[in-house]
Structures are given as structure tokens and as C-alpha cells.
Image (cartoon, rainbow over all chains, first blue to last red; front, side, top):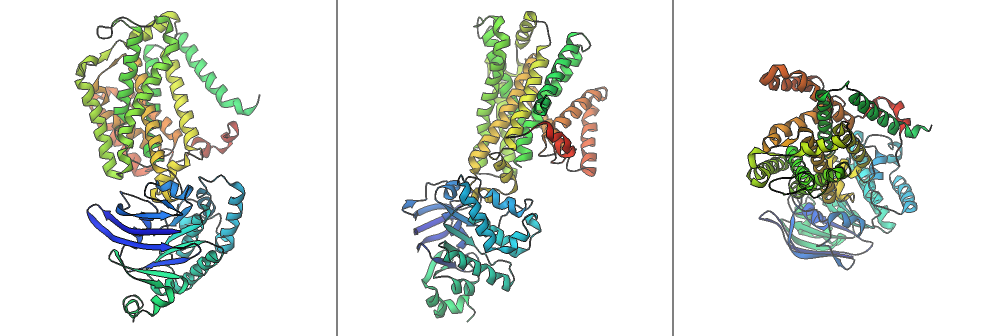
Length: 240
Length: 338
């Protein structure tokens, strides 16, 4: 479904990714794990085509999604035409809008009114907590609820491919498991997920396949179970 | 009568009232000019509010766009209706002037909107302070360019617009400028209100809140910024055109950084993200400028002082980001959207 080949990415003159390749197949949960500064977020920003000043610049390589290269697709069309959504790092929700308004905003460019109604239901079924908070300003939500909202908002764009940047960040362990269970549930409904995580243990537990990113290069890849038992990965990311 | 016509009716009544009092001689040349200046400032403040208030970028080159509009509409008007040593004989008889005047203003609008691209395109790649510097530079580029174009008088300025206004008054004696400025203010407020409160215009507010989030929520931020910058500078150009015909004379020295600063002061005085605030602030500001005239240079101490006091006690401006209809919700039944 998504294949990234030999992707080289720069911030100014600094190369952040030194030619990485990976694929995501339909219906999979694929995770990219790695430490701070490994290039995980950079990879997602490149796929979402978010360029300078905030994002990186693609120097070479290709990103192909559903048979089409994304290199010449502008960022808003990644959402509207390619139907890929990003739940970014730090959530980036609109704090002074209510939960409902945040979800509504994600349908900004959609025309399929009936599908939108079922998508609301889907989000509220997945995260019942958001129902209680519907009319509440989203900056007053807890971290976990805000993350739910960020994922829910990605869903509301009508995408069938969601990229998540550290959904576990700043969440209590219990909430973290709730979040991942919801993602698994979403995946069983047919959603393809590309997941970025620092918390390698939980990511590998829920993903089908994984790639290990280290300072801009992929150093290991394979089945999630395999990776979990890989001694190198164990030593570096799973605490021995 | 249905309530939905209340606002247009009220506006027509206000315009007729103003025109009639002017006609009857209760409003002299001074009062009319004062009211018109106020209207020009209202357009400037409201249009700058789109970029600085609603979109949250800091643009400080508004005078530059105003200058472009002022010069272009002056040149077009003089070229069409006035014998001039550079442009030769007039192309159209003066009797066409009242009909052609909106077109003259529209050329000012369009040209200023085009120059707005000067700022819009860099805004794709830069943010915050750097964009502010670019807008400042754009203002200076326009001013220096005008100073060096001999055909429009260079630093001496350009005139002849008064003849067009006088020509219109000869045909039908009434204060034409009052009519045009009134129309300009109504047009500005109407366009801006329709824009920022439309679903499409919500994208502008989304950029203000969080540009990355807007982008990943399928807002075409580049196009949105292009539209907002062009609309804002275009309306500044309209204000410039009206100003030129009101004063009858334009020179580069009228469009310095001081003029841009006045626009900024009005936006912050009225409240960022409030059209009502901008209109109100423009009114108050013009009155202040006029009443403090006896202070001469000290005026520029008194007005900043007022601004400091305002920031101390009401930092969000007079209206904050509320509109008149938020303060008096009952007004809402007099108009409706969509």
C-alpha cells in the first residue's frame, strides 16, 4: 500500500534520514521504533509532505502510496485525495474549540455527508470518553483524552491510512494500553496504521511488523515477535 | 417589513441622512473631509485585521499596499478624464466619471492585491518575526519605487484627481466622496464578514490557531494565506484610492512606516479578530488625531501614552475578539447568514 524507497531527507544542510526503505501493506499495523533523534517524526512529516519551515525537505528517494508517487502531492491533498491522516506529535488539537468542533473541523474538505455521520458514531464508539466531553473545550481535557481526540480527528478526515506519532507520549500506563487496544480495534475494522513509538515494548506487542530506526538509518526489521526477541533490539530498546 | 432587510435599510437611511445634511449645508467641507478620512481609516483597520487579527500573522507594510492603490487609481483616473502633460488628452468625457469611478477604485484594489503577492509568497516559507520583516521591506520597496518613478512625479507627488471629483460635482452638486467612501466601508465590512465567517474562511482562523494542525486537517494553508493577504492588501488599495481622491494629491511621503503603524494601532486598539472593534477604533483614532491637533508634535506622545494605558488595563483591545452581535445578542435577529 505504502512503499518508501531510499528516502533521503534534509533539514537545511543537515541530512536527517540517510536513505531509508520500508513498506506498509494494507490492513497492517507497522511500527517504527527508535530513540530520540532517530528520525521517526521526520519520516512521518516527509510522508505527510509537510515541508519547510517546520518540516524537512526530501533530497532523494520516493514515496509511493496506492501506486502514486507522493512527491508532487501538496499536503492538503494528502488528506483530501490520498486519504491519509496524521495524528501528529504533541497532538496539535485546537485548544479553544470543543471536542465536537475539533472533530467537525476535520471534515472541512469532505462532501460525503452520510459517511460523516457514521464516522462520528465510529469515533464515539471507539472512545466513549469523548462522548462525555463533547461540549468541553479541548484544552481542558487530560492528556489521554487529548490523544483520543487527535486519533478521532484523524479518523474524521475519512482516511483509510492513519499515521500516528507517539500516541503513548505523556500517558499513564493504563491509558496507554487503552489507547493501543483502541488502535487494534480500529485495525480489525480494516484501518492500516503506521505507528511511531519510543516505547518499543508496547509498540511491538500490538504491531504486526516493525522497523528499528537509528540516527537516520534502518538497522533492523521484521516480524514484531521476531524483533522482540532480537538480542540487539532487546539490549538497546527493551531494557535487556 | 421583514427583519432581514433591517441592516440594508438602516445603512441606506444613514447614507441618505449624511448626504442630505451635507447637501443642506450643515456639514461643511471640513466635516465631510473628516468623515471621509474616518471611513478610509475604517477600511484600513478592518482589512489589516484580516491578516493581523484573524490569521495571526504580523504584517506591518499596510501603507505600501495603500500607496499602490492610491497611485494606480489616481493614474487611471487622470489618464481617463484629465488633460495631463504626461498622459496627454483625456480618453473619456467627464460625464462618464461617476460611472467609471467604481472601476477606477477597482483598478486600485486589483493592483494592490497583486502587490500583496509580494508578501503572500514568502509567507509560505517564513513565519512570525521574519515575515514581519518582509512586510516591512515590502512597504519600503513600494515607497522607494514611487520616489524614483519620474512619470508620477517622483518624491514631489502626483495630482489632478481633484479635477475628477470637481467634474463629478459639476454634473451633480453633492458630496460625491462621502458617497464613495461610505460605499467602500460597507463593501469592506460586508466582504470581510462574509469571508471570515464562511466555512472556507474558518481556515484562516485555523492557521492562526495551529498551522500544522490546519494543514493535516486538509486546509490548503498556502492558498488560504494567498487569498487572505491579497484580500487584505486589495482593500488597503481601495482605501488608498479613496484617500487619493479625497485629498486630491498623493506623494510617497504619505505612505511611510508611520501610516502602517497607525493601521496597527487601530487594529490593536479595537481588538484582534473583531471587525466591530476595528471600525470603532478607527473612529476613535481619527477623532483623537483631530482633537489632539493643537498639541502638534506632542500628539505623538499623547497617542502612544493612551496605547500604553490601554495595554495595561485592557490588553485585548476595546472589543477583544468579540463582535457587536456578541455584546448585544439581540442584534442577531436583524441579519442572518447562509
